[in-house]
Length: 362
Figure 1 (cartoon, rainbow, N blue to C red):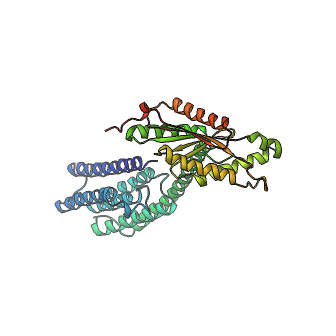
Figure 2 (tube, one colour; figure 1 turned 180 degrees about the horizontal axis):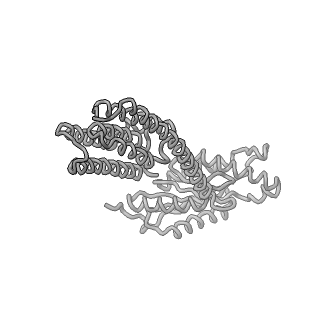
Figure 3 (tube, helix red, strand yellow; figure 1 turned 90 degrees about the vertical axis):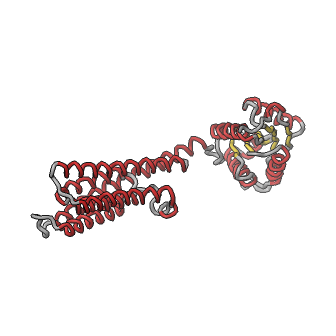
């Protein structure tokens, strides 16, 4: 998930929490208006100040100081939960008549954290909430409240939250397992199982993205189509299992020889595609020539002792971004067949047509 989307999700969650605290203050004001609770002016100042300070601190940390919490609270749920626990404890101090109602609110807070916190986090937060409850009650000294009963209430609340923590921990494990499964499925969908390289589907998406980038910023790129020469002879002579091992080694060699910014994929049989990002023809030619020479000189573990077992014919086509992809693919394919016609184990380069070299958009 892109950082911008993650940041927006955190801001949305914090906005929801801030709205909930504001509604809690509004409800407290309504209860005070009908005489259900009695709150002094000083207590109102403390309540509003606590809510404003807690929410303001959370927004400040989220927007201005992410390094302080990203490592230990990557989803930014623990920090707001601490703020909510502090605010709820203050509400109990200001209006002890609603202390039981406030405790009921805490499980609702935990529901919103489902999938993001584990058992230890639930235990810690609930322990702080129980401690805040006891501290607020003893500071308020409400009339008619038995001091010896409140620790029992806090203990029952804490134990109940521990059971909730078990459920939340299970939900979190399921969420993590689901995320891992989805990531693995996404990898399988876009990966060639034999070579470990991206497959044709992924390659097409990368090619379209690079074309859009070139058209946007006016920076050209180069497409290379590579075909292993006479690879059928490898399968016929050594067997298909050995041929599969050779293809696997070819994939590893390509990843080793190409740059991190390049995208290489197996697009069929013994044919591979390479997108050389922001590469002029001469620069792309140097990279691909290094790869061609490495393939020709490599001794494959699957067939030890064989020299020049695999060579490659390569067609290069550069583009400025304005050329339709089918036309670019056809030019690279034509260059590839020309390389084969000229004797294989070589590279043929086609220049980008003038009309495809578009200026950068402003």
